[in-house]
Length: 255
Length: 173
Ligand SMILES: [Zn+2]
Image 1: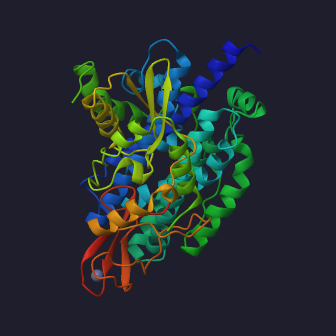
Image 2: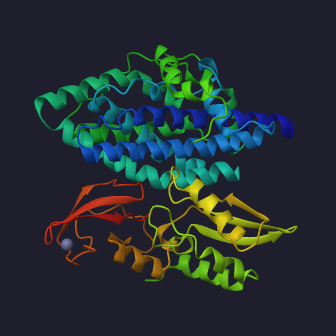
């Protein structure tokens, strides 16, 4: 394979990782000033910042790879819905606190397995971003795990909401472990991560936390996919409308 | 308290032929903790000269650290003020920043500022304990963690059971 096509493949892969971080980070910012109490409000805003910072590093690298003068802002603010490649679970509305907690748990466990593999990438920049991210993910996971235990094994109401969130999100988790041709090729080259290989450990970890929290792992009876091919739920369009509005109506503005 | 990462940085600085630049940059403080310099916090990594251009490398503490743009501007300004115009500041991602690269002076300044410095569990990446971080105000170890994340991502929030004051703890990463 020529270096040019491989560069394009790495660029596409980097944008996927960037989109995952940005969209989830944006969803978390929606909790700012809406958290259940002050400390938790601040915690969620901090986790959001970690994700948006991670997205900036990925977009910055993507800009470098594209080599056509594009900036991180062009990727974040000037692409349309169908051009985003984030996994669907990241774009779902924040829901109630239980829903956001369960989503973070699923993603944090995933990242705690994914990033150590990406750290071994023979692409130095991706490896460096992963090395930075894993340190933060350890803190994120402890927080989402603690909340899962507290709410799952809490009151009847908190337990009910947690179980409902798990049941509504479960069908979106399968997509975390899909590998298309692009990612397979990059995994074979030692650049990307073979996420299919992470599924067993993810399941074991999540199941053990859920059972400790007296919650039940749902059946695998429904699956939703499409993020990596640009087929999104209706929610992404609404999110982008809000996120991109300022930049699009005031091109190039700085403050 | 000395750690390998700090000793290595100090050694690297002492070997550098650009002593005057490092010294000028000692004036640049962290915008959020204005008593500690970016050198003492471990954010300042390297000074090199390439084809007449000074290249200053800095590294973010956390991925989303909102202070990086300000620090970048402050670095240029500090050198410009001293008559050095040919400056480029670049962001270095690897190796990832660690609390181990803070200087002993930086830890002391944090403490005096009212922020408990990171407790060095050497070799580990121990997460923040639930209690026992020494209160920067009264020195008591009867303290408890209120939140894993405080005013910024790099800190956790504690409360002292002795003097009853809340305080920030600079988390170890
Ligand atoms: Zn005290």
